[in-house]
Length: 208
Image (cartoon, rainbow, N blue to C red; front, side, top):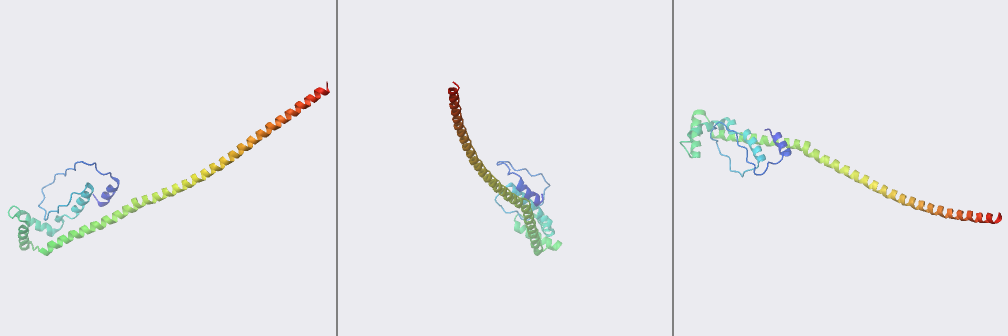
């Protein structure tokens, strides 16, 4: 799986459930004994293993002719010479006499693998930068837009609250004026009623 797919998978996929047994590797043909066993690192998570598998595939020893050649000479000696150092010294001596292989060529082969590894690191860093621009930076910008929208909404809410207070004040003023009008009307009504009643009495007296 390319690094870009692994990077996106690392971002978008959920972590595997705890206790989930690791997937069993598919059966493969018997491969020659490796030139040098990998160091006993602490077991990493599934995602780290995916990156490691990608790097290991890109830097297989068989990809370098000199390393593949020394391994081809050393593999048949494994049942006979169990000591690793002696076995590969014997393999080198045979490879030198039969194929012209040298110690310098073997070491340059490892240097070539390190160059491939460094190139993979550069590719990975570039791709993570690309993903950062498209995924991380874009989300940061979206967060900024959302915060700005929140501030705008808060300003609108503040304005609406001020409008509510203003309308409440106007309502109280209108209610007070209306109550004053009712009181004035009631007083005027009673005054006029008393006047009419008084005039009625006067006319009743005048008219006998």
